[in-house]
Amino acid sequence: MKNQRYILLCFVALLISPAWLAAQELKPIDLPSPQTDGGLPLMQALKARHTTREFKAEKLPPQVLANLLWAAFGINRPDIGKRTAPSARNWQEIDLYVATAEGLYVYDAKGNRLNPVLAEDVRAATGTQDFVKSAPLNLVYVADLAKTGDANAEAQTLFTAMDAGFIAQNVYLFCASEGLVTVVRGSVDRTALAKVMKLRPNQRIIAAQTVGYPAK
Image (cartoon, rainbow, N blue to C red):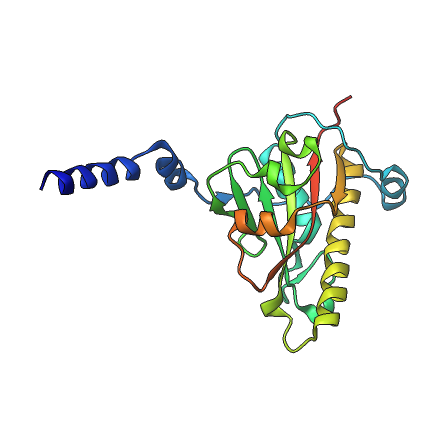
């Protein structure tokens, strides 16, 4: 009886541990409506587009984050559900995972919100470079192969990579327009990160992208 009571107490203590409580506290984040006017003219944004690997730790304000995600892969034609980046056969198979100091979320373009995935800081796992663990935002582009229909493996590999590339370029242009800096990254331990993110077997990590304010 004493052993059973001890085991029960240990189980209760585990349930109310800080880690368990933190998991319960991660809530969906409703984003502000994206601001779709303003910014640099396209040719100026293209001229300013560049890659940077040095970032301030300063967080992006909610409005900037909302604008960034909409520019990346938001819905720009609500009547037909089409988006700011093209996708093969309109699969819309790329999910944008958002890694911040507070936790891991996935972008819900239709609901304009961030849905919680993990209540832990997984930024360090999103790449092999040191800066990823302290930069305020890491995007992880994940292809949901369940949305690719009867496409063969070669088509899946080609088209999902292209679709993620379209989104990454949108992020580059937004950053150039708004005074942010970014780098898209292929150096990712995909197997390890997939385990951290608790992805399904038919979800494939394509790339990651770090975003923040310039360090200098």
